[in-house]
Image 1 (cartoon, rainbow, N blue to C red):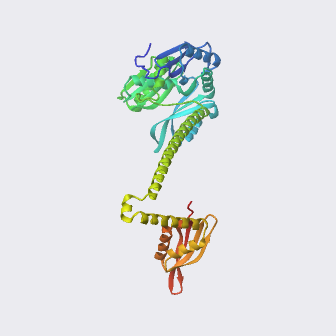
Image 2 (tube, rainbow, N blue to C red):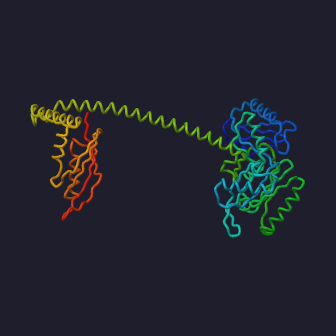
Image 3 (cartoon, helix red, strand yellow):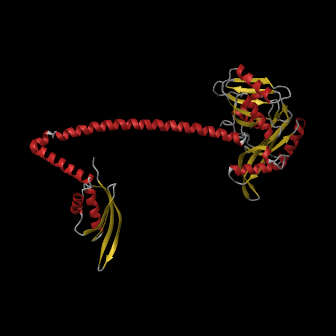
Length: 447
């Protein structure tokens, strides 16, 4: 029976979910619900032992229905799965996962290294007056997970998530009903196994696994007695048993794992750590390539802007130079052509004189310039210069104001650039105080 609540809102041919059970293989893609019988004796204690046969069945189903998308969410049954509610300290996810591994190893005859685990935080609890984090912990034998991954890859699919059938069924069930407000018992039935979730105020309070559906009624009676004992005989207890245990119900639950429409969004991913790291690495590569392309595009745009700006500035400079050679009519009227030409020629000669003196480090001109700009109440101790036209000026002045005046005069000179006061301090000299200074500057080199 198809669920009237299941209306996938996905792109055509996008694989929503892949459900592999011992009876059926279901694929939900866009508005298509595809299924095929699972090869006989393909499973053994939850492990897919006929991986090639099952993979070929999936591949044939995809080809026959022209499904092109290769990304999928898969789910597994509860055979060989351990579900527990644990209270753990507030730690980093890696540390909590270590605690989960150690705790679940107490309940099954496998070490943590033979298990794939995950957990989902449910909220705060108080344990012996200590604030802790309540988590839903899941552990599955690696052998089971590996068999699913191998089968899915052989079928040519990229598995993004490995979830649990029971969680998917609960999501689908809750999406059809109102959010549990009081005490609600939600029972997920898979083949001959049932898991009962007790919800209190929309949060998982307790869970119980029945290894045989023959015990279902007796198990529900025990759970009801537990709820009355825990919450009082007057507590309103609602029981919901998922009856539509088919591919559509599971697919609906899987598609709801990232939806805001469902009140139950417990996200468990049992992909091995190395698989998750590979997917994260692939995402980082895509991000790196996207960022690189964006940076290159920005640099090309900036380079183009610089070319345009350079061309515009060269045109402006040529225009300004041309105008310098041809005084404006206003200047012609005020000064006359001859006076303007003489002023222009005098300025050009003065600039050439400075350029020549600086480029050749003609110290007669440089020292003459220093002599012009140095204040009367200052004198030099030494002057140093190197082949890169860097110059250090060390001296003393009557006070700090005189030093600042000297610095400003050097900055105003055409002979010096990048003038910096490196050091200035008072120096006691018998009965008066003088200011010691060190100035660094660059001897201008004008092409």
